[in-house]
Image (cartoon, rainbow, N blue to C red; front, side, top):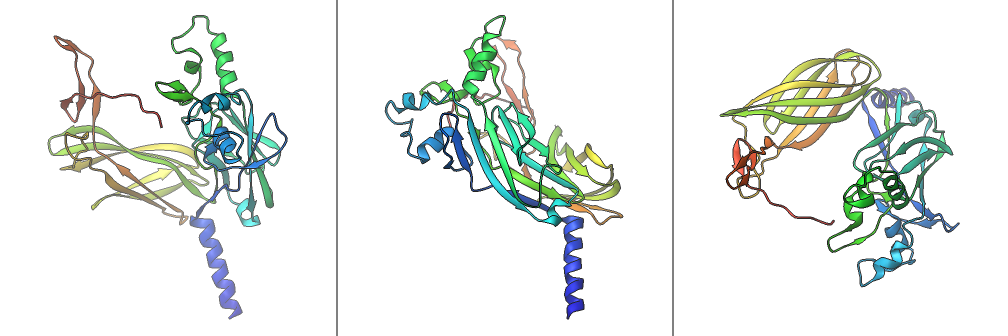
Length: 339
């Protein structure tokens, strides 16, 4: 029995080392604002306005003229912190990353009191290698966020020629935060998606997508793009599933972080069309990959629409021409949307 248990635990350990990507979503967040010493509980995803409301420091800025009482905090910096625990096995993994899709906006990320990275764009993913910053047991994640209002004003004051739109145009941040149509001016500082710790021993698929290259009658050409990080070089067999369609191919993947592309041809595709012009067909896509020699593997799932959209700007007697979707002219009109 003891031998069996040892063998079982060894097998489970090897399974972890050879295949598993583990994610730890940071929770139990606390918040602090520069004008106060106390730390308060808060919800992430969230920001300094939602934290102020949670802790009964302000009333909802969307009611009456409460917007103005919330704006007095625009110039302050904020801090958010959380804690996470790591085992020795997790610490010894080949890769340990800190990742977040929603740092808004000028942030500094600290792990156990050491700066690991900075952000300046709310519209992209930020990832940092924290393997040399972590410790066994309790770890602290601290995110310091500077006032986007003050930074944008400072950047705008340095413009030789003032740009239309004032300070908002200098910063990569949701523009409606600066006031938009009927929306209040709430230049928030916060975290719009949950940060996570990614632990991986061998290979991790960072990103995968299918882009439409060409659509012809009865067929379409797509391009598969895969960004990955691998500890070792090896030959991989890939299986790409699109609903009930299957594509098999081999690819040599090098150690490190790389991007590879693969052309895929599909017969009789069901196309995606804008609302009112047809169905919005989305294929269920699964990408499976397994190494030939090392028994490493990964899998990725997402949805994909086969479509080709072009903006054709040509003058005619009525103005300028329309969008071209899947080879057909379509008129599209929009308006501002405030989340």
